[in-house]
Structures are given as C-alpha cells and as structure tokens.
Image (cartoon, rainbow, N blue to C red; front, side, top):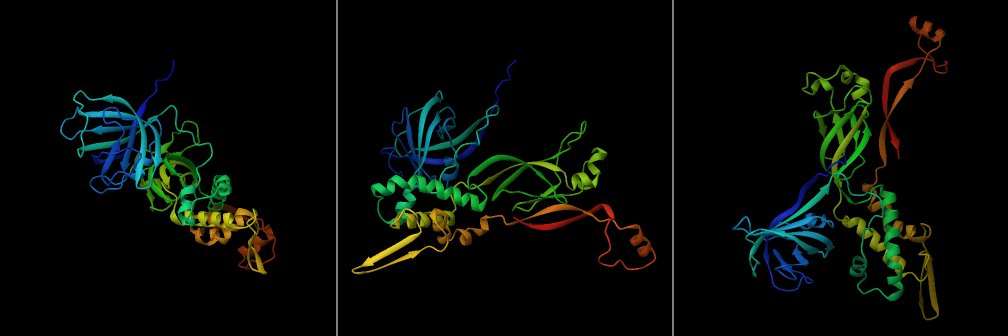
Length: 386
C-alpha cells in the first residue's frame, strides 16, 4: 500500500500592504504592492517593507515555485484569494513574484486602489519529497553588482566572461571559507560529542530545534536530549544525564563513555539569506580587477604614456585566485573560515615492570625509560590546526 503524502505549511512572511496602481514590472512604494490584473493576477510586485515598516524581503525570497501566497481582506474572513508561486525575482527594494490563482473565498472582492490587504507567504513542504540539496550553488554576486561598482555597463567581451567569472570566484571563496553562504532551513547533521561538547560546522546558527542522542545499540532507543545548553554561536554542551530531569532513562545512558563522546543528530536552521557585504566586496573587486587587466591571466597590469610604459605582475600567483587574494580574501574573510577544532584522543602509555617497581619504591620515573603503561579512562582534548 502506498504511503499517503502529508503536507505541512511554514509561514515565511506575513504583513499588511496597500494596493497600488501601475505595472507589476516597476518598483512599488514602501508598504505597497502591484498586480498585473487584480481579478486574476499572474504577476506581483511587492515592496520589501510592509505598511508597518517591517522588512519582509528575506521571507519573500525564501518562496520557491509551488509555494503559496494568500491575499486576505481585513473585514471578512471569506474575502481572500490564494495563489501558487511560479517564479521569484529579487529586485532589491522589492520582490517580483509570478503567480497563478488556485482558489478564492466565497466573499472575494477584487480590491481597488489604496486598500489594505494581508499578504501571507507560505512554504508548502511535501514530507515524502524533501527539496534536493545537490546541484550547482548560486553565485555570490550578480552581474548587476559588478556594474554598480564598475560605474558603467559591461561591454560585449566582458558580458561573455562575467557569468563564468562569478561562478569560479564564488567557488574559490566557498572553498577557502569552508561554507556555502546559503540559507538552510531545518538542516540535519550527525556529529560526535567531545567531552560532552558538540561544535557545529554551521555559521551563523539561527536556531537549534532538536538534539537527538543516538544509541547505536540494539534494543536501546534514541532519546531526545532536552538538557543541553546552546551558546547562541556554534557550541552545544550536553550535560550529565543525571541533570536531565528524567528518572527512567536506561542505565546505558548514564555511562560516561556514551554521553561524553557519543553521536548526536542535530536539527536546526543556519546560514545566510543574502551574501554578506564583505564577501561580495572581495568577489566584485577581484572580478573588476580581472576584467580590467590587459590579459586574460589576471597576472599582469600595464599602462603606456607616450613612449613610456610599465607593467606589474601580481605577487600572489596567477588566475582569478590571485585576484581574490589581492582583493583581501585571506584577510577580510578570515573570520568566516574555521581554522581550529578539537579532537578527543586516548592516552596509551604502559610502563615496563622495572619502571613500575621503581615507581612503587618511590623512585622517580626518568625520561627515556620505555613506556608501556595503559590507561583506559584517561582522555585529553588537544587543539588541531585545520
């Protein structure tokens, strides 16, 4: 028997906006939204700021094709229309959304101008078909970001190269910083504790929604951990189970070697809705430098004044990586890169019989004596350079 699909909804953004005349291809005023046809719209232009001055841009940009937007009247619960999203385009101070009408209330009335409506952006999640995580990541900047900093439109030769440069530069920055600079909602990761401490690879962390201790033993269930502490940065501390407040935990869970260094499944939301400004600045500066050099290698820059000419070679190497390093990738972006972590090691050191006899007699153990002593409960945390 096929399993029935169960759908849940997550509200990304909700607020008051006022209708405004004009095409849905131009920017609406703050707190306003336009539609190409109010009775049966196919295109919306929604201001990032709602009518109360709250910024709803991040929530609107989380919409994906298949999600929904509801338009609700303020005086009748049946005066509403529901749209399914077909496309989402970021326009900076406003968001353009392609839609298709899929339903309406029994009292729906086409709105006139300057009328207040509630817009609610809803993510529709099919639990049997979670969104795919594979595929190319988007570039960390757009051609418009380059144009805004270059001060002119791109010429034909530059247009032919810009998309590839943005992809390559974004990949190099992601590799250096060891993160993808995207938003991850309800992400799940399995990690090991070190001394009861879990250091997450996520940056920045918006929320921790669940910590599940994995038993790994037949007949012993996984147990939700509610007695953890999150430092609001990237570290979760799992305290001794005696502090859990649960009186009937299996005895297995009180063994120090389990909770102190066991495996945990963590669920949470993290990442960036928009590319950080300093990341975009480094990427755009490097690409403009690449476009401005007289060769494709981004290693030479030269200038001629009459009979006099000079050239300079980059000192950081060749290619786009050299341009990124000259733009400050390793200095301006070093805070995004995790450079140190901790690992747990067991100290194995066994003394020879003669050394043990000397030690029992009060003779101090001398350096250079063969080491063969075994300690099964001795652990040490050491720093490790990444």
